[in-house]
Length: 449
Image 1 (cartoon, rainbow, N blue to C red):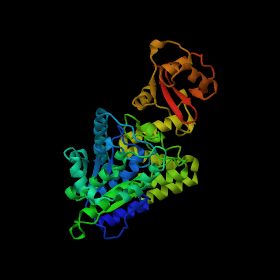
Image 2: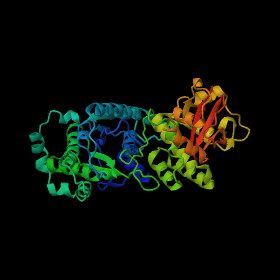
Image 3: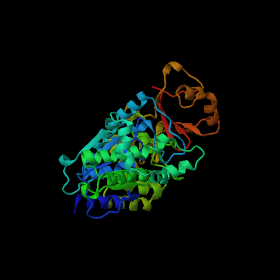
Image 4: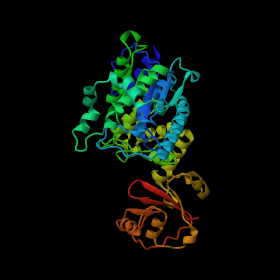
């Protein structure tokens, strides 16, 4: 079986293909790429689904490229948007570019280890044969003038096709319209594909389903640029489904619900928690799409889960595997332990839980070591002295005002060390760790030592 056929079977079995060029077993993928504009300082979970086909191709030994759009970010992609994108300062763009480049580099290293742990070993693909390169489109645009671009690209593109693309028609029909710079974004993305095709032999572009128009603009440009007899190899397009919430809303920065992959923005515990509350059907789909677990392991996890749905085994397996792939195995194990201590089944002192009855709670020093790097850990300054509970919550930055904190306290939404607190003015007398709970799932560690 060819490497691309084996990879294609993985992608379709895992529901990672939303749309694609008509697949034939004779597909000859010489290189594949996926692009991201540095509009933020980190990739997010929504980006991860478009990276998964790239990861599968990489593990099968097919050269892959991540394109960072440090040129196109200056214009803004209109796909999936109803308004113009906010312009970023150059310093911010450069910082974002550097951060995302580091993330992709780290992911390319971690994913090989994660694949081995999952037993994902494509036949004939050795680690030494895998290449994952990072390119920047500013490298080929910075010395290109407008006349050269119009002559090299513009003459091969028809305006009717540009206006017919979904990302453009939806904006044309809106009250805000579309700017000329956004309209031409698809030409730049098309030329990116042409450049990578000419210089690196890349003949497959991958993106989210809202990128189909931009990607096929690239395949069209390449076919127009090269006469049929001179086309070095066929060109292909592939899009993935968009990740959505239970309400159908897209995950992403623009939607305001991005789950960042950078551990300094979303620590491993918080990343783990992001998947625990997902409905079974969505979590089950994500387990297929966003992990490298074997079909046998996927079936075993789902079967065991539905024998006891309250265990949320699918959700925990999904959370562990994503943290493992993105932050590393040790951080996944730590996030799993933190989750057991904060959301286990058996009550334990100080507001913690343990997984099973008669299981000993770790010592105070051990608990500090377990949680001290987590975003849910708050050190209480002893110099504050006894102060009203509402003020303490404000001083720690948990609430922006005493009024907001007091309202939540009086509503019965807050407990500490398993006891509900109803008086905003009570002074706490804890001298150890204590778990503060807000609502159903949010848990914070207060260190009074």
